[in-house]
Amino acid sequence: MGKHSCLILVPLFNHLDESDLEKIDQLTKRHVYKKAEQIFKPYDQKQLTIVAKGRMKVYQISGSGREQLLRVVEPGGYEGETALFGTENDSSFGEALQETVVCTLAHQDFRKLLLTYPQISLKLLETNAEKLVSAENQSKFLLMEAVETRLAVYLLDLAKAKGSLTFDLPVKMKELAGFLGTTPETLSRKFKLLKDKALIHREKQTVTLLDPEELEARYVIN
Image 1 (spheres, rainbow, N blue to C red):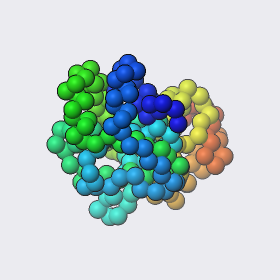
Image 2 (cartoon, rainbow, N blue to C red):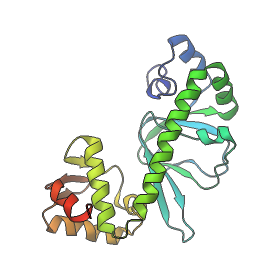
Image 3 (tube, rainbow, N blue to C red):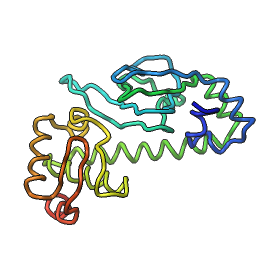
Image 4 (cartoon, helix red, strand yellow):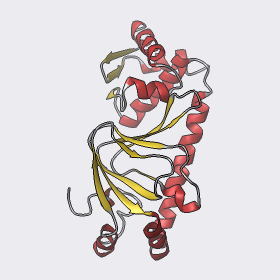
């Protein structure tokens, strides 16, 4: 890992100069987690968790015991900032999807940084607003009655985000099923449905949208 490897990836910090990064870097701690190893859990010590390498899934457990995926955090992303506003993490878990390197910044140190560098506070407000919009979109998304509609919207959005009609699913079928509010068995059937209609092609984790316009017309546009 290079110098300031965590900080230079994060929009909260990467606009600071070298001397400021050096000061903040001294406050962070680095940790390496193996695939499927837990990174954080409810009521852990309050801290900012930054992903430097690998990927981390953030999820909750429903009342029925089912895992509900909230998001996948890529390098440069982070979790734990809401603790700054007095919100206790009483339900979210973080788990490594592959070997993952994270940097942590203690709650009290982060609060001091916000006072020292006001521009970080502005960046924090921006990114929190983006997360809020994302959470609201997911809530609307789960209100879609048909699972095939949820899947079609998800695939179309992912293709748009990746800028390609061929892309890899960022999570395994179990996690994706949880994100879409269904079961892995039902999700597999819906993938087969779209494949049989020649709308997509899927080879393990790789998906190609064969006819995105028709996929949208059939399952998204009412």
